[in-house]
Image 1 (spheres, rainbow, N blue to C red):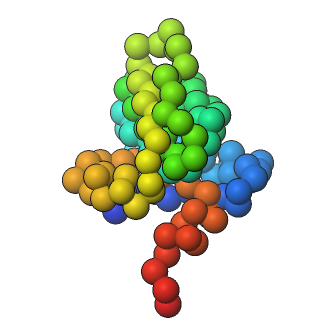
Image 2: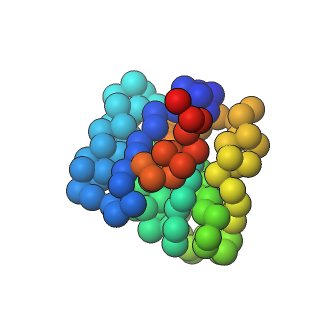
Length: 126
């Protein structure tokens, strides 16, 4: 799936239970359609907790190839947590969200997770 067709999941700056439910619903919808591989992009990932939880949930749902990419402008790039699961690959980077979206334009992404405040800041003036 092209980035523009990815399922966007947004949340207020503070994570909520409803975000977890929405992410879970998006993951389940992909599995119901028979998907076994997934690429997740988390813009404004902070320390990476949300992305890590999402890739682990994808694994419990039966995804067999999971790629997670987290980007944040304020948090320094860090090494991905050590996961003893060859089905999961994680990468973190420091960067500006618009630059990341531009570089991802030719890539595919199945699930885009992003803080609503970040999307509002990126939205063009109406």
